[in-house]
Image (spheres, rainbow, N blue to C red):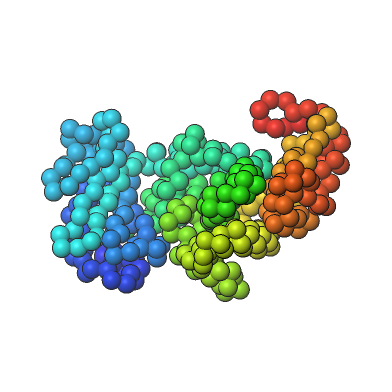
Length: 369
């Protein structure tokens, strides 16, 4: 079959080698009824001279290409399997840093994954904690993200039908809910700080910063969870956030000027994270499919109950976690100082009011009766 040109869908990449489209396409085993989708970093603008051409073949059903013994292996450097099932093939282009990566899917697999993501989104809309639920959700998030910007080179009508259940705004929220910085990470940072281990505290602060800034990109429509491209995704934030993104890049790249400046750099990270959370609060009000601020605070309050053994730790945890939706929380510097003193940071959250009408939680989902 004659395949259409895909060169116009490739973003400009500094230092990228030229390529022969026919040489790339001969690595793909395509049938007439297949959808051929082009995606990956060379399409979304985050590519490098050593990136792959990322293709997905979406067939109506499995055929001989999907099985180890009948897969057309000629000319492939290697191919990946899960048991008998062939998942992908990979090749390098001669005299080039570029590669060709082809994944093999069926239309029912894609629609089943989109349905699984819809269930995951509904689950995450009902909880206020950072989540790792992707691990058990039957969602291939890398593929899911690619579907949000992929280009169907063949059978576009079939592609539209297969991806009818794809909602990019919901993908952004599930990515956000699994990215944005968590209280256990901050508490670990505080423990390192209390020990005087500022070097480890700095590593923890960098991670907390990367998670929070990745969350900020998801609020603004980024569906890609891969942290290695974070600086490039930050460059796509709206113009008013350019200075904030530049400050992140400088701090993550340069770090402290001297060993004596490590502690001060940790505090600088906390200030920067505070600014990122402030932008998250402002932007989420207009973000499609995001749980609203008041609704989120309601979910957060639903974890509390009047019979709890109240202490400073509970107060500090909720002062941290509420900052993605509430302005009435202490700066992270103050929260760090409070944890170091085993004290409670001042805030305006009505924790006891939230808890007043609830008895102890039932079950493992932190849902109070």
